[in-house]
Image (cartoon, rainbow, N blue to C red):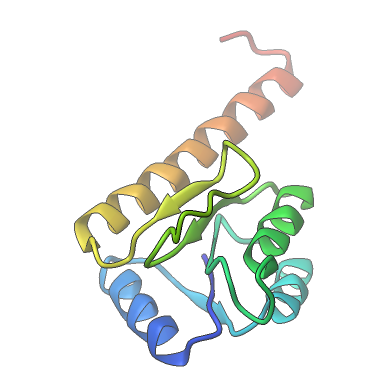
Amino acid sequence: MLLVDDNPATRLTLQTVLEAGGYYVDSAASAAEAVGKMDRREYELVLSDLQMESPQAGLQVLAHARMMDYQPAAAIITASHQGRAPERDSTVLIEPQDVPGLLTKVADMICGRATKRLERELRQAGVGC
């Protein structure tokens, strides 16, 4: 998975928690770095802070993830909603201070992505579900 956050302490803490949960975590400190990484490598999941170098940076990361052919699951990870909701209803807000909830949502998103990918491959192969 790709974790994007401009705060080094937050990024390291979340990376440590996710790795302790059994996930391989690559990280980026900005939207531009995240976009470059997504263009070079496939990720099952992209978790991005909402506000980084600009107020919309996290949404830009998610928009880029949704354009990728490999279609990673994507979510905003934020410690505070601050009354702001993401533009798309499908964007998941994950609060990192709820560690069990964080790990559950990450597992659910990765599982959901795998299910959609399998269904797509079965349809392409002409196998009905």
